[in-house]
Length: 70
Ligand code: FES
Image (cartoon, rainbow, N blue to C red; front, top):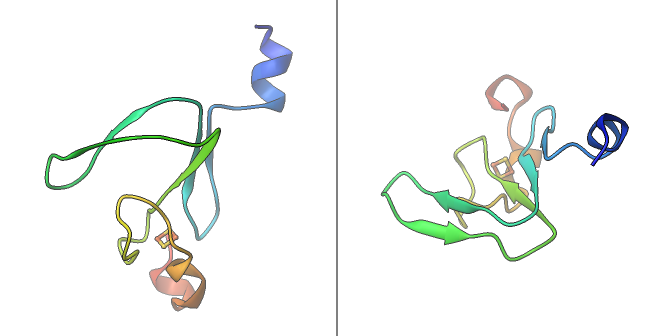
């Protein structure tokens, strides 16, 4: 893999006011210590803390006031 490829396709993307997108296979540990394997080519992790499907983003961040979004 070249550096150019990494720049065009980063492994982690922080979406302003929204989730963290991670590319590839990962094991995510939630706040309770439970492990969740990623199952998609790109997975969205909640950063606002309001998703009902933690640790995954369910889109709830879109209805939050701007000042409370990550
Ligand atoms: S970042 Fe999307 S629901 Fe929390």
